[in-house]
Length: 154
Length: 280
Image (cartoon, rainbow over all chains, first blue to last red; front, side, top):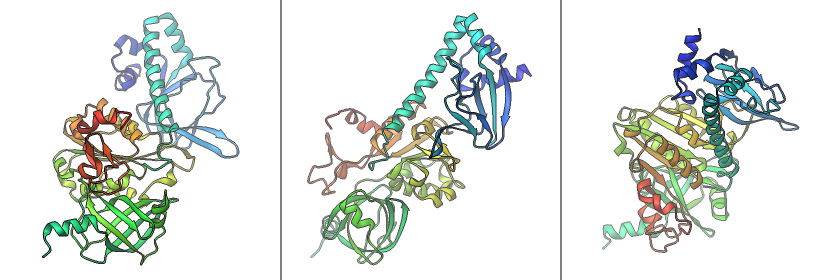
């Protein structure tokens, strides 16, 4: 079972270039999960103990904004990471996450990984660098949307 | 005695009358008009544009979203109501006569992509000039390998050709994304350039045809570069303030080129440096 998880992670772009030892360490904090279409994965304010690598399906990340209801901020597709609130205190989810279609994902225990990163700074630096790259990419895409480029003709 | 040159000059300098045959509202501010020639009409290649004259109001350049292959066939235009002239065009009821000058500009080199992969990347109303490329690829599906349409709009309500998008996905890959949505939208929310990294194509055998806001084009080109697509394989449709449409007035000048005369389709290799000059 653990071997299977290692192999799954080796095929995910986020983990590309990691050593077998690092993959094995990270896989030790992971397990495969499944969510049905429409199922809530987490809600804003929930304890953020975990993050996910989506392997199949897509997830709507949203914010509940009365009286407009839930607004979808972005969708996370296969191969992408979901959740980074586990990285920093207060470890609470900032947004809602809901499966748009059947989602198969690998769920990682954030507390377990934080412990391993504290024990192994090389692993910790590598993992944080990879998360920083994801954060920067999403920030850039968000900035692009802030420009509202379709708002005034092309 | 009229010469071929005279006929050509009449076509591009003097408006030819076309009657609005049908008018369909695509979004809150965008309409698709089918214009039937009252004279001989003209053929249009994918990517070319026409100057559309709303009599008594003014003239604007509009890309052809449904080009006639032979003279006499209707011209299909998708127009966004953003000013006085486009408002007059979008408000034109069937039977209204508009003036068209054209066809103008160059075209998408879609036939040069035969045997390879095709990426059609559109943002907002930029899908209109790319619609002929999609239709050509579907009509000649056996001539191409991987074909993808990557399309982004502001919201689900702003998507053009919604019925066609559903039909096209049976023939080619179609990925649609919007900038913002509520929970009734089950598709993607995000930006078009992100899609470039998520679809299957061969960078060394692809031709990418891109049209949309220049900011979107900028980030799309970056995403194509990250996938290893060379500048010579990236084709962009540019837009500036076109007035005459025939390279005489200079309003659409971009450095050494006049977009109405030399474009609107360029390779990224041709315009990469020009796009970085802020003064242009």
